[in-house]
Length: 209
Ligand code: SF4
Image (cartoon, rainbow, N blue to C red):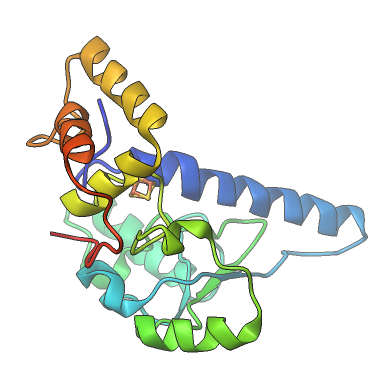
């Protein structure tokens, strides 16, 4: 079935997973260059608080804690968690290490340098910088995601289908083959119908909703 907000295997398998494989490769390269001990990694990402309630709750700098990380932040939590589990008690929230990217080979910290920026702040920095802007923005998309994102608004999906009709048709063919819609209450076939009957959208106003 297609991913959904509650079942985002797209993010875990196609974003987090490959990034963690890259981290492993970086550790191996550092070791091959003679580095001794754990390789400290700083993971810098462009997530912003304005993008969603979940992103608003993130800290702009945090250790990516994990059960297998032996650092002075994770190890005491693991000890408390193990003790509670051994006694058959629920693990208290403050003792949960999570399943972040750190492990015995690498402590990983996450930094979100533009976490507090608004969309206008981003464009005010990008425009004079000379950076190339992805054509999806000029085509009216409010975000650069997967072409058809399961979290996108209906209007963003319709615009994406206008821009990429062949890909939309492939999604619709998959829907038919597996017998499941792209979203529980919205099929790609419906999105395609709307894309074909609507005038080209100059700019999609919002991402969600
Ligand atoms: S952009 Fe959307 S569809 Fe793509 S990985 Fe992220 S949540 Fe999933």
